[in-house]
Each structure stands twice: as structure tokens, then as C-alpha cells.
Amino acid sequence: MKEKLEALRVKALGELETLETPKELEEFRVRLLGKKGEVTELLRGMGALPAEERPKMGQLINQLRSELEAALSEREKNITTLLKEKRLKEETLDVTLPGTKKKEGGLHPLNIVLNDLIDIFQSMGFDVVDGPEVETEHYCFEALNVPKDHPARDMQDTFYLAENLLLRTQTSAAQARTMEQRKPPIRMICPGRVFRADEVDATHSPVFHQVEGLVVDKGITLCDLKGVLEQFAHEIYGPETQVKFRPSFFPFTEPSVEVDVTCSECGGKGCRVCKGTGWIEILGAGMVHPRVLAGCGIDPEEYTGFAFGIGLDRLTTTRYKISDIRLLFENDQRFLEQF
Ligand code: PHE
Image (cartoon, rainbow, N blue to C red; front, side, top):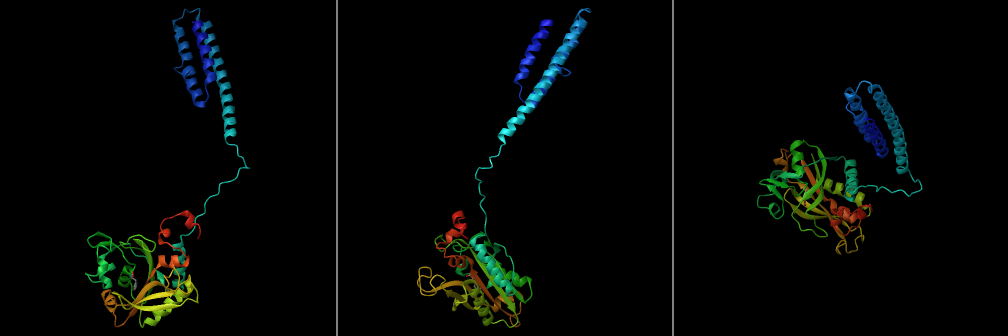
């Protein structure tokens, strides 16, 4: 029994030196000194000893117990110091090291131009409305007087999601929605993404951006349309910019116009950007077709209106002299950082 005690003592003290974490120490304590621990078991086993050996053995076991307890708390202290030292070493800060700079975010050029545009139109009394990108044939075409056999409805131009459900090809869809919901006077713009099944190249993308505008009130004329759009062009491109209204055709406006401004790159002399013409087309517009007004429950005898659709991507590329529309969609940080 005595030898057994000594062997346990040597083994336990040796093991203690190898323990490195508080968790290991606790496991050690339970295994030896706990209720079912080895030392406790020894005490229990004393019953089997002859009566005269019991006091002596009891004393020895209790001695071992105290010795182990003392060694345990000593080791605990050492470990705590070791851990602390290790942590201090790991967490040292070298304040002389150069810092790593966080990249600063910024507005996308499309949003910069859009914000300017919103400012300009809000100052003229327009409010900003939102419209869904997934539209019905009704709002994208029917309500806008686009007949069933019109090429714009062709599967080749329009992304259909289901029968009667499509990705809007023009923000004009928001015109009909607004006129159905509100009574005149109406003065709104609706910026947003539009989708057309176009091949991608330097000037085309299947996703692009328009800003729709709509004004409906009593006595609105083509003069009002010209005034508003000239004001807008001068604020965006500068007061020296000339604005040209060309007759055009859209099913939902009558008469219809397309609006060109003098090229911001060459000032109208003709260059690569304007393909030598001196002019850049920025929008389509016209007087809201009486049939469209009537279809939305607005009496065309009482009210007239005008609408326009600005190509935001074109506005942005000409303003910043961006040579390829694809740059607007690639999210290349080296490009975006320049704005
Ligand atoms: N929706 C037309 C287009 O996408 C532009 C437009 C808007 C024309 C409003 C007239 C009035 O080409």
C-alpha cells in the first residue's frame, strides 16, 4: 500500500508539470482529488486494512492529498502567468508600422448625373415616382397606344417573363400608372432601369436607364415642353449649349419630337463622339396622345400634357466623356474611383 501511494505521488507530480491550460488542471483535480478520484478511492479502501495500520495510512494519504493540492495551486499560478505573458507577446502593437488605408466608396457616375437631374426637375416642381421593372403588357404597351402588331412588342426586342408579363422596355410605363392613380395637375419624373434584347457593344446594352417625365394640366402646350427641356439641357450641359427639336414619332405622343444638344466634346464642330454631326440625341418627347389620356380616365378636352424620356446612360457618357457604355456596368473600381 505504501509503495502504491509513492508511485501515485511520483506519477501525479510528473503529470502536473505537463499540464498547460486551466481546463487540463481542472480535469486533473477531478481525476485525483474529486469525489471519485484516485486519492479519495484510496481513503475508502482503508476499510480493508488491519485496524492498527489504519491511522498511519490515513495520515499518509492525507499528506499526499495536501501535497497534491499545494502543487496544483502552484501550477495554476504558473499557468496564469505564462498565459498572460503569451498574450502580451502576441498582442504587442508596433505603432510605427504603416497603416492599411480603407478604400472610400463613392457614387456611381449614373447616380451623380441622376441626382443632378432630380435636383433640376424638383426645382421646377416635379416629384419623383417609382415604377416596377416587371410590367404588364397593358402598362408598357396597350395603355400607351402601342398596337398589338407594333415591332416593339416583338419577342426579339422585349424580354417576356410569361404571357403578358415582361421587363419594361421603357419607363413610359410609369406614365399610364401615374395618370390612372392621380388627378391632374401632374408633374412627375420616374427614373429607372429598362430592358431590351439588344446585343452588347460600345453604345448598346440590354439593360440601360431612362428618366421619364410627365406633365398634365389645363392649357399645357408644346411651348411648355420646349421651355422645360431647354432649361434642363442648359443646366446639365451649360448655358451655351444649343437645343434642337426634330420631328419624330412615338405611338403615345402627338406631335412627337427628338431632342438633340450641341456636342459637349467639340461644341458643335463635329468629332468622334457626335460622329461628325455636331449634335447628340438625348431624349424623345411629345404631347401626350389624347387616346392615352382618355384611356387613363383623363378628359383630353379638358387637359393636355407632355411627356419625355431621357436616356440617362447617354447623358452620363457624354458628360464624362466615357467612350464605352459597358464601363458603366462592369463595376471596375479603377474606373469608378475617377468620379
Ligand atoms: N419611351 C420612349 C423611348 O423609350 C421615349 C419617350 C418618352 C418618347 C416619353 C416620348 C415621350 O424611346
